[in-house]
Length: 345
Image (tube, rainbow, N blue to C red; front, side, top):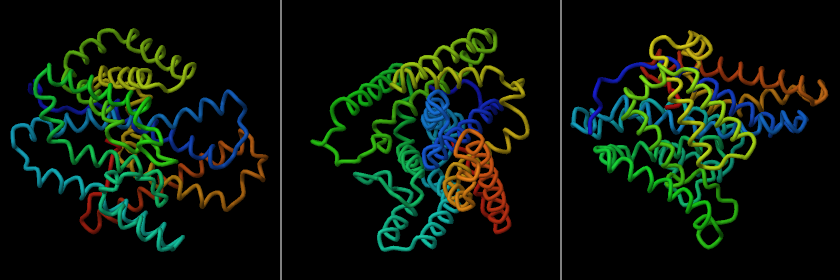
């Protein structure tokens, strides 16, 4: 099974990446800042942490758009593929790890930084690493990159692709109901850090890519229907929680809605600010907690009462600082011939 047409650019996906990165940042800021937003707002903002699964679906989609045919047909070697992944991700992540180590030096942190710099820390049996703790997503994503040639083989025909996706869904459910207990994992284990548990989301992105021409036509011709589908799954998500089927529905609906616009995406998803933020989405995601610690030193939350106004001010400052930091570092690396721009894809 091959992709019928060459990969194309879907500008609305920029908006999904940008808003998802901001959503995750807001969740972490609220949780770590102990803001009092009231039960409804706290529930909504707290739920935005599940946007990491949207990143996984987008990653599966984007990787298939960019590399599926080249890997499947041998147009790019496995060595070149892995080299590109390291060159794209490692410089910025390594800088953050070294800054974190310098800020809180210890032997434990040194060990964790060493593991982080391999980018293979997602293969650890319990990859709960405190140095750049939000980097757990990067650990899962990089294991997906390591397995990407195998992933391409699984998607080579329709029957195998659908079977693989269903098996991945079954494994996810078994992980949550059977394997992730104290007989198999240690206390404090986070199931999100396990690539088998998360594999179904990458498969969803891959399946959307394989059928993207048909889905683009359906979504483009039925805009209200796809929008209603997004709203319906979002309502289920906020009302009933983040179960795997609901998360898959939300992420798949949003992705299909986004690709349906083609080159005529709405301004809220596709514009110059969204494209700019999408281009540094991984940097913003990885650095926002470091920026939050710096902003917290100003004690603005206490000065502003710790309510919604304080949260908005602290979140805005934190995200702006993360954006500026990411942009400046990107330019600095570019001056030395590096290409650290890392979309969350």
